[in-house]
Length: 333
Length: 180
Image (cartoon, rainbow over all chains, first blue to last red; front, side, top):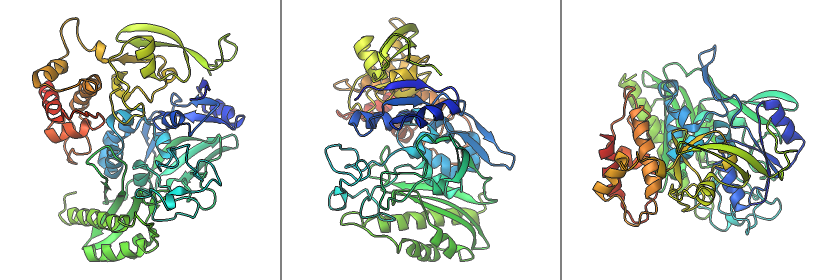
């Protein structure tokens, strides 16, 4: 690891200022991904600005009945928060499905959103990678890509975003609050991450020196039920092969409201808007869920070894929606 | 804003204070030093082990302000001011911690390399369940309150600790006994 300077930020303006003046400085949250990437030589910052002690560690109800989650709240704290468990079970489940208890205790909410892909080639500095070294090529397309993207990829990059939490936040229509030298802005989580296009080195729309200060959840959709399900190669502590976050309200057997997002299929949490549009007003049955999912997944472009993700994602989503619809009809709420 | 500039030391080192197993420790460290390396190489607390050094095996698990963390991924500078408990700090004099006793009673190890991490992780897992923290296998809708540590709960909650000897069956028994 290369030597670096370390500063502890006590207010966000100073943190932003330090980064703005140094193109090779980076914010440090829990460090579970960044420190690992520094050990691998993938990230080589000249300075770390530790933002984990900024006063953004609170979870508070908003005036409209939503929830505001500070960016330095640890993943485990958010997962077990009573209001999250009660009102946003999909978020609690997604967090608890991610990483290990030790990592969740360190990882921050802001850092979770900004973690990098786990693509083998990105993490190996001996290999080409357009995300790590623009223009060097993408060996994954013809190489090891079982875990990689089937939606929204490009010639230049087939990386997936590894977060579980971000998938739930996308389904919940959450927003991200940010601060930079230019001021503050708020954007939907669904618009935070970028598809690779011809600039895969940019994971998100954030500028250098722009700091996430909070994530905000709108009030839960009335009478909706939500759940997260994740398929992986072992029962726990592994990244998703495919995952789904769903929020559903059914009345008299008809879909009234549905929000659906996939994880591990693309460089960003994949909001299934085509499936959502196809489902509203339709019968809440396995058949109509399946048809809507087929519409959504028709855009998929699998590589040699990752085509299994398409039926896997479809079945996961149909199963979750069917469970949620069944629970609704049973009046369990 | 605390700065390393103008303190007379190289600008890639930082002075910090930690409370480790109840003892105050002041050190100036290279910013690259992980908490694990500080514990093992500087403080000679070699209980926590360096297995993968990438947060994947859990052999480096220690308690940071009571919460279990991978000390290999935590920069020592980022732990400034915290209280750290390592496996060396669990016993009360000659009296072993109940989970240490349970590991002996249930033969919860073979080579022992992962054991300090397993025990620190298990101590925290028991505390989290007692506080009512759910896990990925806890059924939804359970009332707030302590979670009973079934075999399935222990397997999920201890999934961040790998044992290459495969002593899992006995580790689960040890954690469940200590939780009772």
